Amino acid sequence: MSTYVYGVTAASHPALPEGLAGVGEPPLPVRVLRAGDLAAIVSDTPENLRPKRRDLLAHQAVLGETGAAGCVLPMRFGSVAPDDDAVTGVLTERAEHYLERLRALENKVEYNVKASHVEEAVLHQVMADSPELRALAEANRQAGGGTYEQKLQLGEMVAAAVKAREAEDAAEIHRLLEPLSTGVEPGPESTGWLANISFLVDRDEAARFLETAEGLRAAHPHLEVRVNGPLPPYSFVEPGPAKPAVPAAE
Image (tube, rainbow, N blue to C red):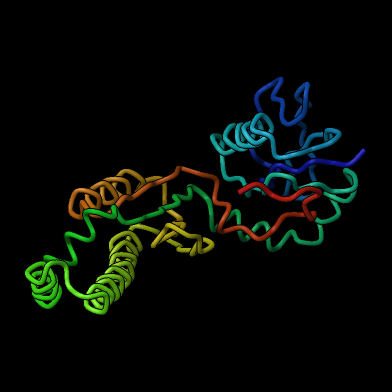
């Protein structure tokens, strides 16, 4: 039977809670495979594994329990190896890398920060910041709305101003939060977000990091800022000992 991998820890990691179960229906028992100074948190792989909510939450719960007792290198949902020997073999082959990562990520967590514009608020902001836009809008208003070309010109200028503001706001988020982190990784670009950034944060700095993010919201009411965390440091670990058998869930 293939082996499902949740994460990698030091062999000296404290014992997991008795009866800890992971993915599958019914949930499959979690166990530990050791190879030298390393250990892998694993279970058997359930049949027809898919990124269902129940299994996604189970994967996160195992990592949460493991991470509460010490550093764990998390694997993405769906990381599956052919068998236990394949897992311990990779632990042995990549021991130097995993041990370096465990040292680097000790006592650290990930926070993912996403930001978008509140449409009406940012339009008000760019108009307030640009005398040229205000003058053109007023001229159109006095002309009964303006011609098609005048409306098009105003729309293009507003769109350009909003785009420029997106870049400015993304840079501001990075500028304020980066000094409170020990690592930064950009997330995948996606429609609707002007920033998608993961920060590696020392647990002792977490409260200040969250306070700064909250201050960012208060100081910039045209911004919607979402902070997800603390998370296992997914963005700061290379892919695990096996390729996913199913697409990894985002």
